[in-house]
Amino acid sequence: MKQSYYPMIQNNANEYTLFFRFIETYAPQGFKEIKAQDPLIQELELMLEKNQQFFFVCDLIQVKILYTSKQSTRMIGIEPANVTPYHFFEATHPNDIQRHSLGRTKLFKLANDFFISEKGSALLSTNLQLRNSLGKYDSFLFQCYLFYSEIPVKTVYLIQVHTDISWFNNFKHVYHYYIGNNMSFFRYPDEKLLKLGNIFSEREFSIIKMIAAGLSSEQIAQQIFLSIHTVNTHRRNILKKTGKLTFSELIYDLVEKGLL
Image (tube, helix red, strand yellow):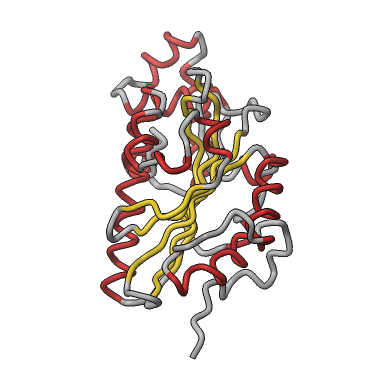
């Protein structure tokens, strides 16, 4: 029986179907012998250039990048043949290293789970500041689609799409975050997509950080020049918004997601 690599993509009618055509074409041969002259590759590269994107394919079990699109040279200053997983970690802004590290840990745990159970696929996405080809930091969306495959060998492949989202200026104290199987989120990012996980106002997130640092309502009120009553109202609203019973539970969840 032919293996299907995109069982959840039927309702995702957008340009990203090109990635699944790419997977369906090249996964059976282990993403080898990919030709630049292939009309599919040419169409994919045109889309990536238009969208300010590049992507790579990685064998997560071998931790080996198998193919990188040509836009990597212009966007991050690395030739496709020289792109390695280490580069992305090294080029991440110091403020985002912790989140990047947690994201990598989750990615490899998922891959390990899929490999052991011999099935599975998932989408993980977040935004990180990444050093560009000019040595400056731009905001990038990382969209990671990983799936188990038995063809040509048993492994877990990763398609990781990087999009320059410098145009989106709302990432100040909160971040985009998604992990799950809703493939409608695997698309070119718009504001609605980028706000996934972005449920707190700047004031709320500031209060959450101070609570995580061990400050009392009185201390928080003094620092941000509000009444204790107003701070306590914010605290109640934050818990109501998140559905959490305690701040310990909320802070643990945010730390686990790499958002705090």
